[in-house]
Structure formats: structure tokens, C-alpha cells
Image 1: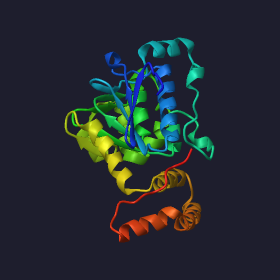
Image 2: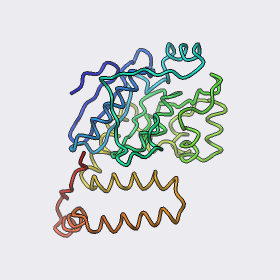
Image 3: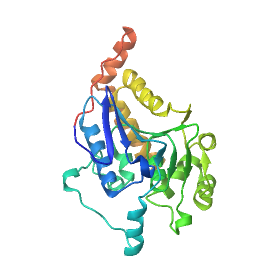
Image 4: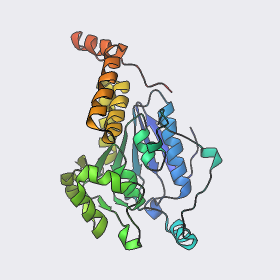
Length: 278
């Protein structure tokens, strides 16, 4: 297992967990942490036993956004700067090399396996963007989200202007962006941003258990293809999406997983599906 500095990475059966591990800063994102998250997600993608990954934070916060030291350097430079970590070079997911899934955190959408955010506390700025681009979001009952872009004189960052309205609608998205007010878990759930509100201290376990449950019932290749359908077809015309779905459906009917799915149902036994190959 890789020895990371700013995150923890653990595997428990079919579920990997990435924990942003700078609790004294509410897990503020450094360039190193972002590179480590990308590298860890690549590790999940390459491990055939891993069905999906949970992203969470250590201590009382999920992620407070970009580390203020790096934000100060960004302000001083007047432009985005980048750091290279050669030992963490990774290109997770996106086997079709789709240009839509190259940037960060947009590359989350190109991962072949589910990524679930377990939001254990404050979630702000770029941390909010990271959570928004996860496939699902589980929130601790006391957690809160804050966009925090407008008070810094920024626009909606890193593609959240594209993703957030698709989760909560344009009016809620503009409210979150413009006001930068704190949105608590129950309101985030009713908006459609959060998938589940967990009892205090249970959010990581709830997210992990969700992935374990689908690992026991669902074909990993089906999970991968449905994620691909949802995100690819959000950017397609309806007719094109239907044509592609019909082609993929014909392929899935001819696949061994379909035969196994029917056989396991008839024989009343757990399915033994193929894994997603590297």
C-alpha cells in the first residue's frame, strides 16, 4: 500500500476509503493532497476486488476548501499554479480517454467505479466541489455545506456551475453560489444534493455499507456501464443516447453476467459476477 502524507487509504473487502487527513485545518486541500486522492482513486480502479470508494475527512470536518497558504500564493501570482508530484502520477478511470473527464474534479465522473462522499462535517469551497462531483453524497446530520466562492471574489469553480444545477436545479444552485450561506444536511437532502442524512458519527459506515450491499447484489460491469450511461448521456441528445443505450443493451444481453444474473435468480443463490478488469 502506498504511504501517503495527507490522506489515509484503506480497503475493507469490496470498499476502499480515502480519508483526507489534515484535521487541524479541517482537511484543507493542498496540491499534494489532491495528487494523493487522484493516485488513491487510480489504485481503487486497478484493484479488481474493490467495487467502489468512499471519500471522507478526518476529525470534525470533511474539507474546508483550498489550504489558505496556497490560496494566498494563488492570489499573489494572479493565476492558477500547478505542482508536479512525479511519484503520484496517475490517470484514473476514463478508459475511453473522453476529454470531458480530464480536469479536476471532473475526472470523478470518468471513474469506472462508484465514488461516494461521506460528509462528516464542514464542506466548503473546493471541498464542496469535490463532494458535488461524487456519484452520491451521504451527510452527517450536523454537517453543512458552503460554496464560499463569492466572498473570495471568485466565480463558481471547477465545473460546479455545470454539475450543481443538475443536482438541485438552477434556482437552488444560484442561491448556494450567490449567498454562500450555510446549508445544513436536512435542507441539502430536500434540495436533492444529499442522498441520505446519517445519524451523528455514522456517515462513513453508512456510505461503506451502501457500497457493500450493492457489491453483494449488483454486477460490477453493470454498475460501471450505468455510471457511463448517466454522465455521457447528460451531455447527449436524447436520440443519440437511445441509440447508444440500445447498442450497449444488445452487448449486455450477450454477456455472461446476464446469464449469471438469470441463473442466480432462478437457483435462489448469490450471483457470481465478473469483475471490472484493468
